[in-house]
Image (cartoon, rainbow, N blue to C red; front, side, top):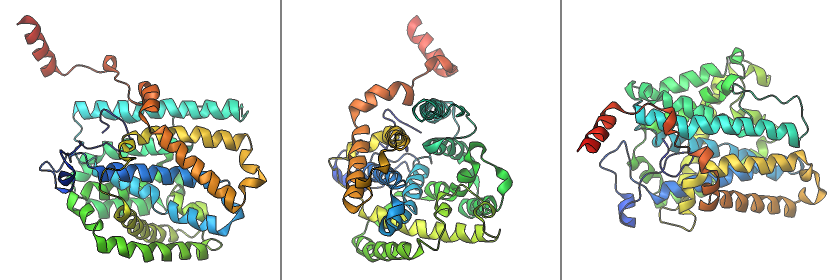
Length: 374
């Protein structure tokens, strides 16, 4: 659920001092705020935005295509694992459901509508319809998060939730009839990462943050980048999006389950390496981890606007210096979009209170009446 400041994953409370942030919370279902997780959320959202900016440029550079494949292999899995980790306290209670609606469902409706209108009028696409059943661009994640979090109590009751989630993802990868409604292919195929997050504890994150793991992550990432460079002409990048079945990608049905398992293993390994490099102390960008929802949803308008206007077609951007400039520019932009001034401007649509839309808790209402009568 989302707390006072919204992000793609909820932020735990701040520890009293820096040493406390490495101690496990006594309430395992509601971990305290930890600079490590805020840092991880911020760095992940920067990677998400930078990778999106590479999409219209990567065709001119095999190195950039390899970097794109590498980042896409773990940036969303890392975010989803953290989302699952902070969803463990979701129990379907009225208060949690209310925050799920205001923090996820309402932003989805607002931004699904906004992105559709943006494409219609900026890209001059009169045929662009507003459909809440067909997530556009970035909004699929809000649909997925809503479904995953709503089913959290189910996963918490299962004896072996991760194998079940993997089985569902594998079945989804061989089911082309699922269609595009609510981007269910992504909901199902990314599901194991969310369920994995539900199964994790603080000690698991401490394990990957050991010095030995940080050192080992260097050759792992180097090998992964080299493998991605080799795979550029040999592998369909669409496998990394998890939005199509094997048959829709022109592969035999059995390739779906095989790729699901292979990509889950690769993504999990790279996610662990990424988390190993995330600093655990308070940094200049730590506070920005509380505004990742803003950075995620707003940067898409800038990238889509540039794409609609043909700015990415400029020859100067299709060389090493241009690609670096675009990467730095979008990293700075998404950083600014996570800052408190931006959050104050857009808080009304991303963190609406909407007290008028919900029934009052009978117990709380009775307590309020008692205070008034007293």
